[in-house]
Image 1 (cartoon, rainbow, N blue to C red):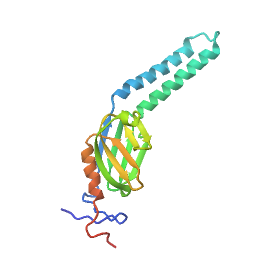
Image 2 (tube, one colour):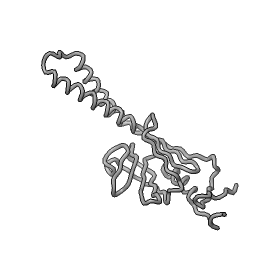
Image 3 (cartoon, one colour):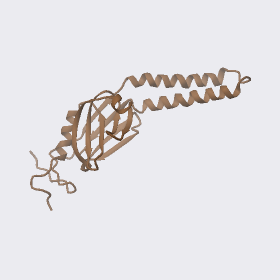
Image 4 (cartoon, one colour):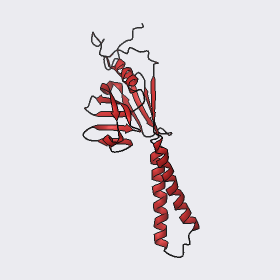
Length: 187
């Protein structure tokens, strides 16, 4: 087994090679139905704008068209952003990227992580729905589906949770990088 030098900033040993990267994902296929609903609102708004006679009730029709298009776009892009989440843990950071565009994105330095645990059951109900969530009493989360997740306790007292497949493996990978050195920091 190869010995690794401690991280000069945290005084921790890395038990895995520097190139060792853990990646995981979680998917939510139900979001496709919501995205279809957004697409339907968008299509209805366009249909109203194109096929209706603008001679009567212009204000009501304009408000309907604009409202349907706006709601359709919000639902469509809001749901597509949280169809899946990709989590990557390298030697220095945990990175969370949502959706096909990778936005929103959160990058947490492992030097700021105090503890990592597996949450066996994270539900959208706990967090108030799917997506990027914040609740003052329990922290911040990225929830794309119901199931297991990774819970990080940060040095400033905040908690970050992300749903991801094989959360136990991710937590082991993070904990390997959080083990304190036996002899203390090397100067």
